[in-house]
Amino acid sequence: MSRYLTGAIYIRVSTTKQDELSPDTQKRLLLEYAQKNNILINDSFIFIEDGISGKNADKRPEFQKMIAYSKSKEHPFDVILVWKFSRFARNQEESIVYKSLLKKNNIDVVSISEPLMEGPFGSLIERIIEWMDEYYSIRLSGEVTRGMTEKAMRGGFQSKPPYGYRMIPGNPIPDIVPEESKVVKEIFDMYLNQGKSAFDIAKFLSVSGITTRKGNPFRKATVTYMLTNPFYCGIVRWNVRTGNSRRTFRSENEWINVKGSHEPIISKELFDKVQDKLSLQKQTCPPKSRPASSYSHYLSGLIHCSNCGGVLVSSKGRNTNGKSYGNFNCTNYSKGGCLVSHAISHKKAEAAIKLSLEDFVNAKEVTFAKTAFGKFADTSFLQTSLSKLESKERRMKDAYANGIDTLDEYRENKELLLMERKKIQKELDLLRLSNEISARDIVLMKQYVESLIELLDSDDISIAEKNAALKSIMKDILFDKANNRFIVHYYLS
Image (cartoon, rainbow, N blue to C red; front, side):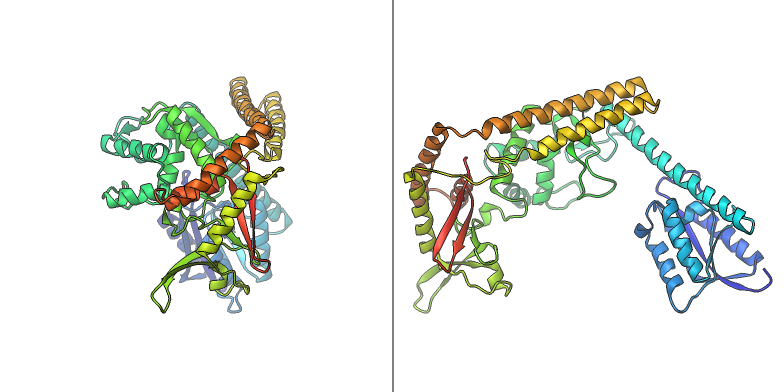
């Protein structure tokens, strides 16, 4: 190049660092190339990403910063230098899109280790290189996933062990930490046998001065995670989440659950009982709702505004005469998000709910609300899951027939699929049976409601216990302020 050009350098070392040059080495070689070819590099335009995958460009902040400079009116550089085209992108579609965008701004992407000839043949070679990079990335990802899957299938553990366990140098099997295992056992006991919520348990541990391995206080989410972690009963679970996301979960039929080689802290029977209780709790207490132990009234979290659907929150105070009072009102109204006040005193709300319970007991005909976890659970999701398993089975057969999977791999996958099918079918059969309402069910339900009316009048029963008892039969309560009425939706408990 006879004239001087302005340039940028993009350096990326991926998460797995497969036989790659270090960032410093790449930088040295790229700067040497720039000097030999009359390309001026400003330090501000050296973009380095270490430990970042090249699969998705939108997850590479330095790459996006470089593209933003390229699109700006200043147009600060004419060429982008990379060690290899694979450093720019491992996704051919994204590579073409970004290179086209740069081309419109008269910016070239040059790989200093993969020189290309001028003209259409050079463009063809560049596309072939991009395709090979993408193929390698896909193949590498598949090999890593397959290896981790095989390890999990053998009961191996491939991350830090949870609280209660530790790794000892030279031993691939997690070892129990006696002091922590006592806490784990206590957490499961408090939840199952003492009736404490995850919130209550976290609060108890904090007050007791018990912290996590990192020295942080236990939180509700931490306790809930421990209660749902099968590692404590000797099972290794893997392939639950998609990629590195903590919030995106795969379908349960893709999870891998195998017996681990480590010693369990609790029994499988105890773990299963806790899972059953957690499932029931989802029915009566949505995941993001406040724990009942923090409520100031037993109707808290149950009554909803007929105008906006918001929850009616409880408040207490004293009037000018010094007399105490208690009211409910829409939480959105108090924040300006709802234009209709749904204020009602505690006493009036209590009287209305007791009247509804009495009407339920005396009613000749009873209808129940359809819920996701109660007697009227929807079976369509399970039916869909069965259909997906059939498609998965066909793909497995094709993979074996085409020589992609070995006979042993096919047998293992088939056994896993059979176990999953039996599990779904069992749940389906149970739900179908539970959807059948008998006259005896209704009689028992009415007897329970009668005892519940007496329970609400008792001063010996806590607010949390009264709240839980109501939630065990009520889906929700709608307060229609305009018509001064409460609409209660029951489900068969």
